[in-house]
Image 1: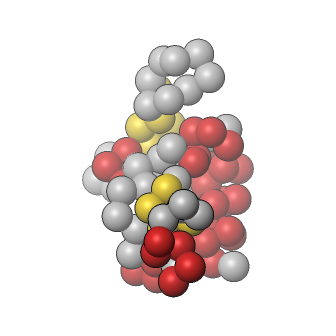
Image 2: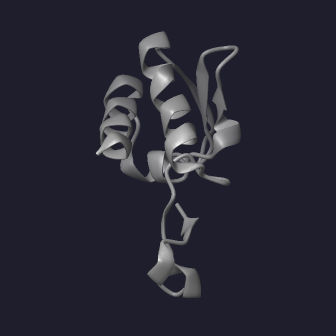
Image 3: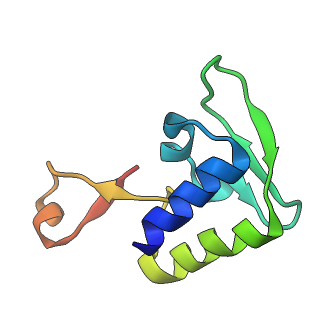
Amino acid sequence: MLKHRILLCLIYSAGLRLKEIRNLQQRDIDFDRMQIHIRKTKYRKERYVPLSPLIANGPKKNYKAYHPKNYVFNGRDMSSPLSARGGYSRP
């Protein structure tokens, strides 16, 4: 539930599309500048959106709870042998 709540808060507060949030990588969130770098947008242009200080705690909690490797919100790779044991390697 924590992951889903953080996901919805980020979508709503930053005005992100589903594809943009799905492809969001850890390197795209800059906590020092309080910005999110959106790389793959609808019109294939990069943009920056502000990150609220209140919302910035969400991805930090997500990192501590789920330990994602590349993407902020990892999903299951059903073709992977690790998927049966909880392997997460896809956005």
